[in-house]
Image (cartoon, rainbow, N blue to C red):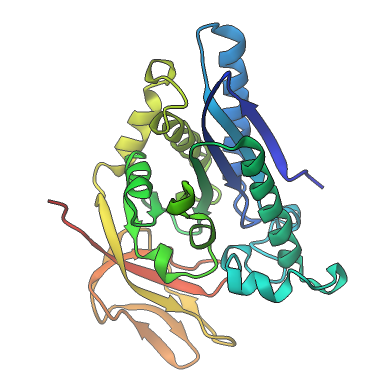
Length: 310
């Protein structure tokens, strides 16, 4: 099985610590491929350009090793829904033999992140959690609402979704985003799982984060990364807020209506899915996000509305 650490890169000058996590869900390998590409690019820059200086450190991590091995979203529990202090307290002192697979993955992941930050002692840490979706359509980031998180998310030049971070418990943002400790977390949703361009988009997002953190000089950043993300976000809302989340109940026979893409407009009363009781209708006008076209998971769909910034 693959190791949890994909690779790391230490600059010659002190600075922020960027941690990228790929494969929190085992059917989302694009983030891992992107991390590998970025690490290779950093080594190439260091080798070929004597003037290249990286400020701080970069670490790439695999999230759910067993789920990645089996190419499944998760084995027993969604790893990106159990990252909360309350959940972790329930299993962290249990004998390893009694732990579910994702509980083991969770403890190993958190230990690695905590020990890495402790070792680096950086002035600021950004954890960039790399995902893809079952639906195609626009890409986006998910951010908490503190100033630094918003600034970093907006620096990706793609839509920023607010409200999901506070509405969903046990996610990476819920656990890692601690402005009081100068630790921040932003989630990237880079497109459809099997779209090869999802890797390119993720590479561009990672590079842009490095620039936003001032880890790399803008002169050493290929402008295609900006162009790629700006082009993707050109006709999409800059900032939206969650207004509705359809959570699938245990035993519910939820089937999403085919054909929805991220940011498709829907109206109140539109049929968006079915279950054992019949049609499921939209309760709001808005934009649909992350419609569920995969067997695992209990998030049916999200509805967001655009925020007009002044």
